[in-house]
Length: 397
Image (cartoon, rainbow, N blue to C red):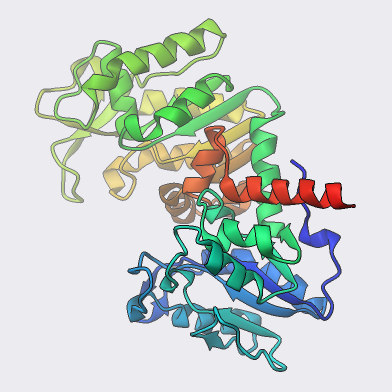
């Protein structure tokens, strides 16, 4: 990967436009989780410290493109950013045709998706954005899988385009996992359906030493072993795929361990009764909501011996106490392992916060869709645009 980095540049006196991912949850006009805002702070502070005039842009939610919907305004983000930076961060509402920065050290530009052409990667909009700055910094890894005007198109037209520290750190951590990992490598992939993560499972089955599956995904693998899963969520039409993945792993000396016991109940509710069942004993009216104690013991033993760990998705319905043991123990095992660990995905972040293990995990990705796209080995348009821009610059010099 050859891209220009913000750390390679001197920013004093420059107008620096930074694309961050500040798509945070907002309720009643207040930010309810500022994780992504905090993740962007080092980049913003560095640019300010160097003496740049800083403009931040981001999307928030899914407004109707071209219209200003107040519920998707970045005003609450501007307020929280001001509090965290301990300085005023004005919100600029109409900015695509230019505005006066004056002596303001930093501003936040209103939701990029209020502009028609953003999600279509419109050329004219990309050029207008590029005209605002001397340096464009792409720092939003979480949106790098989308070819949009503020993430991709602007890279072609800005006077200088580079990658910010948050983006660079994310790429380096993921490359450490996927390119030259230390073995044994263990990946934990949870989720409701095999179909939504088939590409990821396929890619990982060819690389890791152990692929642990959880949630509804594990139910399909249990069914592939010939067991009934009662009324559990699973995908009977993907049993063949589960069998193929297990055989592919086995042929290269790897494994996909299928749960041997599970926690079952008749409903996903805090007042539901739960029971431990061997996978051979699941009743027709029961649903699988978590892995059982024997499976937990086996899987955590594998994790603790790993040199490299990738975690994407809880292994059970951890929001309900009686179905939370599997995810809790997996999280603890990752935290206690001496291996290099990377975790990502919305539900994974929620589990990390719930079990207070954030400081024990080497890198936590805020990426979501981009995180999965990278792990699947697919091209991230914004990264490809930065690489192309670097090649063009090298030809000029």
